[in-house]
Amino acid sequence: MKINRGRLPLWLKVKPPLGENYRRVKSLLAELNLHTVCQEANCPNIGTCFEEKTAAFLILGKICTRGCSFCNVERKIPLPLDLLEPVHIAKAVKKLGLKYAVITSVTRDDLEDGGADQFAQIIRKVKEFCPGCTVEVLIPDFKGELDCLKIVLHERPAVLNHNLETIKRLYPVVRQGADYKRSLTLLKNSNEYDKSILTKSGIILGMGEKWGEIIGLMQDLRDVYCDLLTIGQYLSPSDKHLKVEKYYSPEEFNELKVIGENMGFKKVESGPLVRSSYHAKTLFKSLKAIV
Image (tube, rainbow, N blue to C red):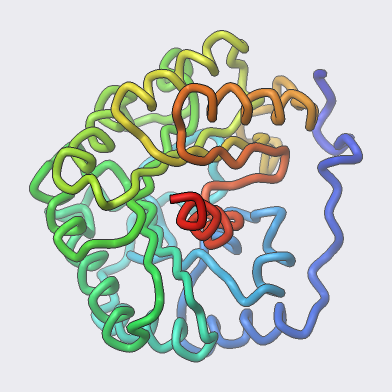
């Protein structure tokens, strides 16, 4: 189904964020000078997640060094690292009483380690301040540097997430500066380093891919033993971004969930409003309940 931007199907319409917890989380983030991918990427689930007192913390600043054509995160010369960020993140996790924290970042190709050490420090601080909190990290590709990946994995996050985002054919248009094989190799390397750390990836649909290419991408992820997968609908942030080529129906997302779990993914979260960190705690807990 091809629909002009602005005329969304009913299943993609969400209520505006108005709840008390939403306001409290937003206020706390501002107080500690923290960013979330929920805010920077204009995520449609921000009201739901903030109301449930969950957020995907965005570290390494809010300016990205790459130029993905689907993404709303600002792109220009980034600012220096905030050395107090690890403590501020840990304080926010503690004040919110989180049992599950998602830490993600912009891509910082200007940094020698791509920000890997900052990820590591934050994982350590969150565990120090909140010993019972589970940590998931959603990392950039670190330009394929294995040593950078090992810095993060050494701190043993429960989940190592790296999004493939789209099919290989669309990478030159959608993910400038990224490499499909490099991203798959990162997930493979994580599994080889420590199989007890779950690997996870996410894709967004509607940018011009074909059904068979989606299935092929899913199989590529299984070939590197990716454990968890999220599948959602691409929503163009503005007329300056990549346009939406197709809106997939809830039934199509359900079909992909079944196909993925039959392929061997431990869990697949698939739906029009699903994002890589949406209901991350629920996905992790449901998996743990199974195993």
